[in-house]
Image (tube, rainbow, N blue to C red; front, side, top):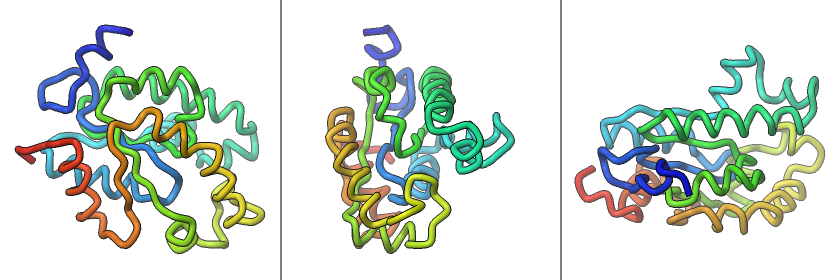
Length: 184
């Protein structure tokens, strides 16, 4: 385990991100992440946004033009960089945890898995979505993605916070409570 991993704790002043949000697409990582950053008085960073900024094109375009393996390489690099550099709230793309190296990198960090059921996902993501991994049959594909990923999310998460029937503010507070942030 690296020194950065050993020093990472969910307390202000420690190395690494204060909070890392993981979970499926549409769960609210970006919205909740921004709220958490505000409450914690720190910065917010999203690795998907980092990739879009670096590539100058949307993730769906990267998938179509270069394929998922290329996107996953970009994602691995973006996560490594963000974990090394960012000390605020960090949101990862829904598939970032597919990479074993990324899961190892998250070990020991204050990771919150934001979860939701399929009906909530359909409501949030929609059936006519432009998300590349849900292009054909969104309900079935979302279920299949979650069957493949749920155990990986729970493997790296320190806490699991259900987002169903909760406002982003309620989810942010639940993350803070679950990570035992008393001063936020």
